[in-house]
Length: 382
Image 1: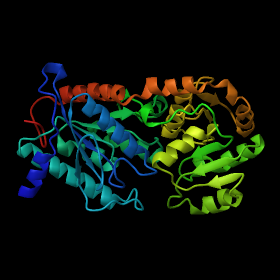
Image 2 (image 1 turned 135 degrees about the horizontal axis):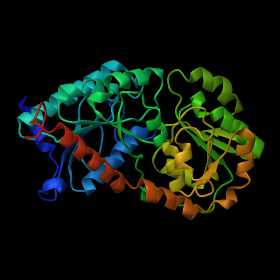
Image 3 (image 1 turned 180 degrees about the horizontal axis):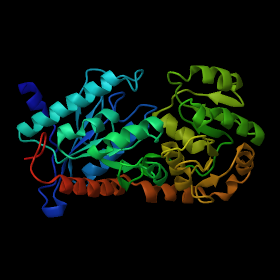
Image 4 (image 1 turned 90 degrees about the vertical axis):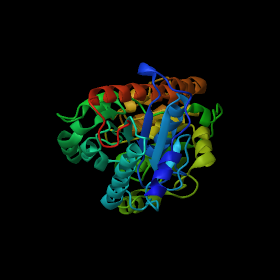
């Protein structure tokens, strides 16, 4: 117990001096998923978002503690909750439950030790929402996935326990009755982390998990129609092996179609920067699509089907093109010269800056704290 309390005291981040009133510095616990470290070395969109959001919150002067998988690094203070990462067991309820229960215990002990939090911002999944009323510190929960039959039932039943934030208007519009969306805030991206490349290589790019709804097989068909080489990058997750072997792998020849697997770090950034375009031939209601913003930050236009958030992220003729089918996507490749790389990058810089995104979340935090006012509960700041 004494060792745990010492780690809690050590997690308090230095601030910029006490602020007053509505500008008072907040103590924020950010709960990341338990699967892989923050930031991710390769695939890991949520972990990348968490990293950038923490960066923005710290830049605003708030005290931020990141509760995350072992090996995580951040501008915030970091406290790992479990002993191991679980990249091959994503979604396993035993690890998510263990992760959240450990977080709740840690937050409670922090309050007992005089280091309570004003708000908890959850990115970890369903367990935190279901158990949010056990915490009593306001819980803000970012919706990173789509609403389908299963998730809609879950949020209709339990969504009232947390303050829900959607990452696109399209996602928010599909929220079930009973799941009130407090705000729509896009995911952050710092364009300074991504190289602008005006002169592109001939290849087209597709990046994502090897899922039929993401459409790597359709990207192959588009590249063939357009007469362009294609690079595929992303993981084959459990359950996707058969699809990958039957509809993707037979076309990979190392010349016209190359498959790189998961790509991270500088290699990932160079891959985006050199591509002529990123293809998004999706067949689902994309909640956000971080790869689109990453491409735009490099001055690389996005050609996408107008499904879900793509119509919000892609500004037709500015940072990409919205098309209806494979034939029109191939035809759009011939018009890539119409997109100015600098203007494409500027569209991402203006809309997804981490500090601006963090400011919008701080407003949500303060509103959640005001609604919960009426005395500190389990884990609350004294």
